[in-house]
Image (cartoon, one colour):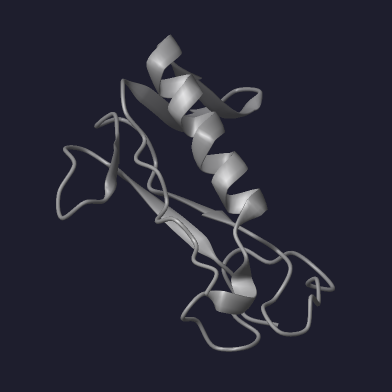
Length: 104
């Protein structure tokens, strides 16, 4: 039976916030490497064997402040962030407009 690995942790110091130029993502080398690993995991995860309903999308929440309950931690001045696959489980459908965490 094929299994997906759990999402990797984001380690190091990383900030995701707004800047005058749009979204700012910055971090120390460890944090940037771990974020890259999380993005690779999200791109490669087999949604068909994940325990999510058809039509859902695999996603990870990154929270500002100290890490708790296994959730990744961003700096205290970061914005809570959701990183998401846009292709839906079961159908592969992409959203027809801005997704921003909505189904469909």
